[in-house]
Length: 258
Image (tube, helix red, strand yellow):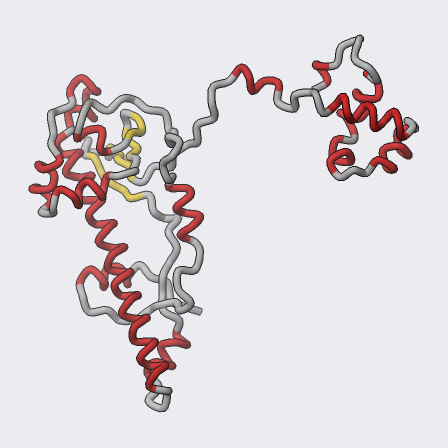
């Protein structure tokens, strides 16, 4: 803001001192402190602050483009030493879901109130469903991405000019799921590849461009989902032995409750 002060600016010297040393004091309306430390009279300080309100605190903003938030890739496609492409889900940020030992002990207590045990039973069943859904989501995303990479190997090796025509139904048939499942799996996802960062859905419609890592306004970014997903989704934390195969895989990723 100092560069916005011209020789004709009223109280120029007072403004220079305020900008350099007392912006925080002004924000908290600590005018007596400013008066004591600068020696300026209170009337001059107030007049200078009124002029300060008309200065632009971010003068360089008018020379930049609109602010576009950055994306966080959901999947990484990396080339290994054998020139094969490996798929890696970037979900290390996801919170661990587990069952509290305390609640498991209450559920197994034969002397516990039947209503309480029934309540805990419903919660445990809900947790099993949640664990299975999370694991299924991960598996589907990984399978769909791997299938897309298999079809678009030429694009990764040689560039956008070599992208192959690819329909969503082809991926659905290869993965063994409904086409709407593929659509949901790639919706609002971003994949990081040696050719750049782009949405997987781009390869199902048109040639993916080399996009910067940006999240378009209006979409729910992975970062925002990360922040919301770290909140408690249930008053009971779950950890239990689960019978279904997908749940076993999910359970293997769980951390024991304290």
